[in-house]
Length: 270
Image (spheres, rainbow, N blue to C red):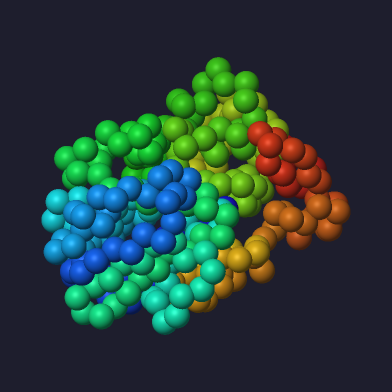
């Protein structure tokens, strides 16, 4: 599933296509539903609206118009691209008066697209319970330390909980914990205040590096220019079970935590 760096790169690539300022001519719904039903008011309410901005909240893309926000999630396999020809699994097409056309493609249909009145955005089902953004000021070591007190759950599960902090998915949780030298199985409540600060710094560093590398392409991820990410070439532990740790040479281990495979170095991470 695309994580924060991948979604951020989709946003950046859409902005470079000139999405900002585009006025909707029509919307073509070519499927009845993705993860949730595709509602007809996308077709009835968007024509005439102009895109004022494009932003990201957690793993959601937010297209802002004069009256609405379009909430888009890529799911497992979703992608946005300018339309040159229709292909299999193209489910939604935005037609703009300029002639630009954007298409949302999603083979597994775990993505979503919903329209919400601007005044109701923060109370929307998908957004109302989200935690702080990991790259913004409210996410601090002190915040994480306080948020983990008395928690017995593994720290990796906690930093992947979107109510605690958003956008830190499986890949980047494993990489950040390695950088902070914290074992993913450590009970969250056992983190010291110093370790919480180091983990916040590691999360920020890993996510920033991944954004600059265009995200990670493990299977199919591409931005809206059709470009793959390259951060997978910088993985220290993710997907490297049995391989040598780049720091100490010990074999990388893995274990299922919270239904996701977790990777760590038994020597470097405590």
